[in-house]
Length: 204
Length: 389
Image 1: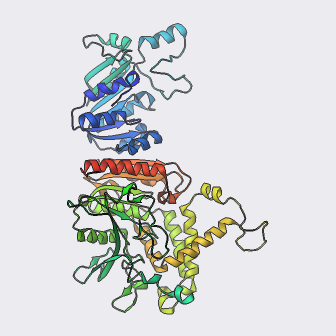
Image 2: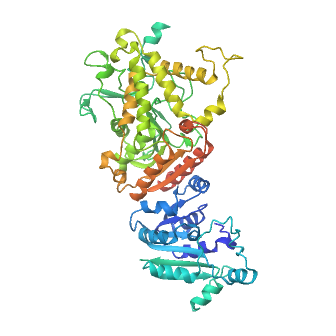
Image 3: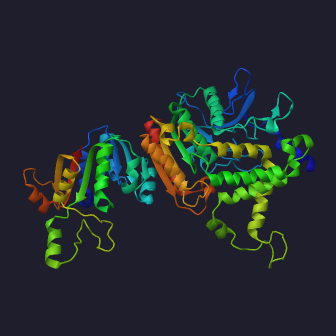
């Protein structure tokens, strides 16, 4: 299983949070990398939902249980607590209504795992502060006019949203630019400044 | 030629050239119409070998005008089996690995009891004396065939269009008998538009004076013109505007200019006339009425208090649904509503929509993306069922 370390180091962090034989729904399953990783290493009962039809067809051809669907519209069809874990990896910022989506994840899953790029990272701040331009980084390679990422947030923002939705943060991890975990003992402001990506384990 | 034409479809109705399983008075078929069909028979074909554990059986359900000859030469037309692109030794559905069963549906005309079969009570063809047959009746009969083989759980049930309806009915009626289900280009109900098209077809058959109220065999006649028109209209719904335009455009048929008459000036007219004419050689008109009616009556949600998810409550079956972008008979939304119901039922479901301009009939054609999806789904189901490769 070769996970592209530069971009999707968060997948391994996500996988570490999931015990073997769990029932998992991966929302925004892309090319099925996480589902394959979880099936190979954790023997999970994994399902996926993906917006792009091409991604879905590739997943199904590889034997994964994936449907075409839109996180903004199609989560409502799933029953309450139908899964042990619902994963939303690198997709929250691309949804039209992140609050509603997060609310649905917490309803469908006994636990929700959300990973997202941190817009509070110092490079992002620097780009806006010094250059006065919307940041384009290795992790966020799109220009403002063609980005699918329409709802960026910082780690702080996300923690606030969790509070608003009554979600308990069971575990949180921030990854620096090299994909290394930032020490647990660090305060939120440090994570918010140096974390390039964040992975949250939640429940409600 | 006339004498030949008026015969029943090469007598395939009573004495089919495939195998037949006959059920006597002790084993009647309970029909949704509220009556029993007895005696009755099922004509079927099998390919490959049933393993000792009886765990490698795949049931293929055919569409409206299909038959049991899915992967071998059709005895009536002499053409290859209707899904030979998919099923056979070394194919996606590999008959050297799987035991494939395909039976003619009840109400059909290739050997399973249908309106062209001889009614033992009268010695004449049933005609319209045969009770209305439903999708669920067809599946009930198939279950008796599957029981005959001693198969406790089918590894997979697959089919397109009306075949897909049977797959959904199987998964709903007998979830513990179906390990995986592949309904293709289908829906959990027949739409109003589809019922409308079918009604046009039936009216065309019944308007033909040679139909004789369904008793045409006794008159030595067959309503060929009516059935051909029905087929022509239906055939349009199996294609798409884009595909028709790509294949035929406004091209003229064997002529340089318009004739200012009602001949088949255009290639599309000639093509449709050909489709109609070849169809009547292989299909019984009354059977066409029964098949279309069975599809019209199909509404899986209505059978479960209007909630489709309840049709699949607690199911352990693994599903894979496939639809085609240009299919306007069973548009993607029909499949999607089944997917949503399966999601609500907590089922394992894959759903692939394939981009093609070939319309509803795409499921019968060489579509690499369709084959890739079926291949991936069957392979992972076989791993889960622990079937050896």
